[in-house]
Image (cartoon, rainbow, N blue to C red):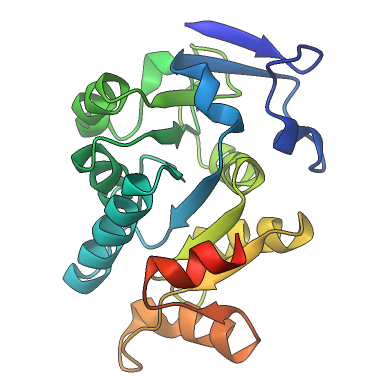
Length: 212
């Protein structure tokens, strides 16, 4: 484990530009990728099979192009995004809402090893002993969006933590990309509303790369 303090040169420059940047980051793995071009992929924990496939494919394709994939190691869209990047032998960053002694969810510890094997990183602003309490995760989301050059939303319900990350992204001046969803699915309500509000609809990674 390494600790990167905000005053150090290797501290991610993108985080220095956000509101309330973390004063330090605990890092496992490849700290050099924290400043690389990156896209955050976020969405529902109880994702549909469609959402999981899309998250995996976009992460895979972006990683193949050398883009670092960022997500939160949660169930659903997050873990599919990490695994898509790993499958492409690319780099991915998992941002935790807890300390390293309490990786959440517990069953994703094995995926952390895969992330590190392919040159990725696991990071958190929380000390190792801090448990994954609910209030940590909205705060964590500002780091997910802050580290990225753009945020891709795959699925989001009407009220969800995903939309909190989108709000952070917009405040930080990040591009927000949206995967269109089935209008009869609750998982697509939030994403389709964001499209109506002017977020960029994307159907392939070229739509994202053109903006970045």
